[in-house]
Image (cartoon, rainbow, N blue to C red; front, side, top):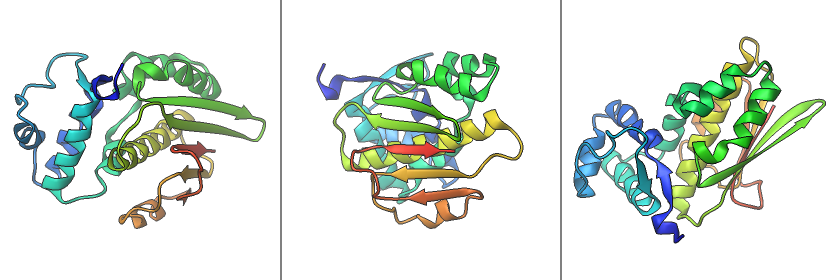
Length: 202
């Protein structure tokens, strides 16, 4: 299947409306510029073509003038945002079991990326890698959103007193890098992965 026609769930991009609202915009402003109806995301479990996702990211960044929308979107995503996979994670008895479940069914969460979960005696590692070609703008947006969502998922699963966490990116530090340094118990390293992707280690 050509990358342009690759289907991805629209549910995460719907949450951009919450992000944009904080900055005086609405998702419908972007949809209008894309010649899409304002109810384009209203159908349950609807999909977007990846070419539409690329265009959407370019439009929302342009109309908002912000580079940190992926970062902010990740903060809005909770375990319940992952639909049936999120509820399945919550049904697992341990954090390790929940993350193994997530890795097994990650294609239902974000099919344009793959997740490899590594469990070691002293730590857990989540490695996210794209499986389709995408622009650098889209890659950066998705890596930041995935990193922040994964960080929230792990903290929610662990509960109080989470361990120190480390995030490693393939992309260089963005203009809003100070936002990462403001997160308690998190160390971020940019431009350290040789292959496109992001890793969360805890």
